[in-house]
Length: 86
Image 1 (tube, rainbow, N blue to C red):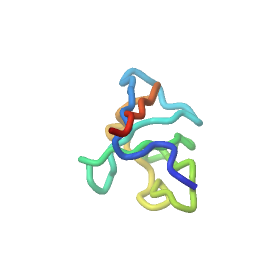
Image 2 (spheres, one colour):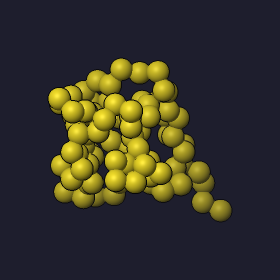
Image 3 (tube, one colour):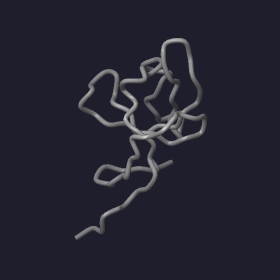
């Protein structure tokens, strides 16, 4: 299964949001905060938010790095643009 979002895709992110189960959000990777991850909110835990990828067998998500602290949640993904290949 191919990823829903690919390298080079542009995403429109709203920073004003309350994380809700099922929302697609942008998060800073807890292991390398310069990387952006697109994940789905699975729920809230004591130490942060549990996020999962839409393709669990091939996804790096909270099963690997644990709950994501609130300060690493960037925003709610409200749109995507896939640039045309040259």
